[in-house]
Length: 282
Image (cartoon, rainbow, N blue to C red; front, top):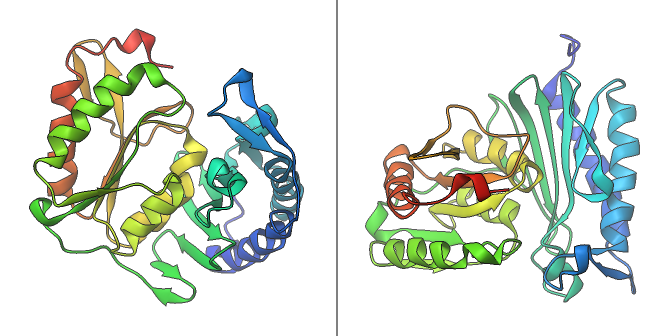
């Protein structure tokens, strides 16, 4: 169990320092790029691996006995009560192509509860962070979600990159949503997109298939900024919002500035996934 004397506000400052230090591995002149499973759209760079190795070493030293769930190298020690959830570079393709939209993402989970989140864009020097019950911040300034209604909202979204077989259902959902909102935005990095939602820059978010490391840290930041986020449970003839965030498998993720907008997005998604074969989802 977590030491009751641990102060999350002290811990988050330590985590921020570790994340800042890890960013040095992204500020390099050259790096290798490898395709995962031979898929040209699914890549990992040597910088991803270097950042994760550094974060794993430092975060486990910060809380001895904690677990570590990271995107790279199959690091999935999630059996511990306290567990770090890490994406060393979310938006790897952006990073590899020199676009300044990628983020180092670190969350802390205690039991089933996400209690700390840090997301850092090293190129723009934007540090988002939050701890449970203490608000959300961007570079030291308190942030909060917008008050936009659904009709006037901007939706961050994307096609299901790593499962292109889901392209048709994604496009159907997006077209339906597009006719009811102001416009779309796509930055190619889920963690930052959810942070932009937390900062009031966009108003809602949807992706059909994300892993926990894609959204865990940003989820803390969004909730503390007044927003809402949910994963969706896919069961035969029953697609619905999960009671708790799914943190051990890929899942659809929706988020919004308020419950009303979340449920409007959820209704659109549910309509188009009525005939979805959940047994094929992985």
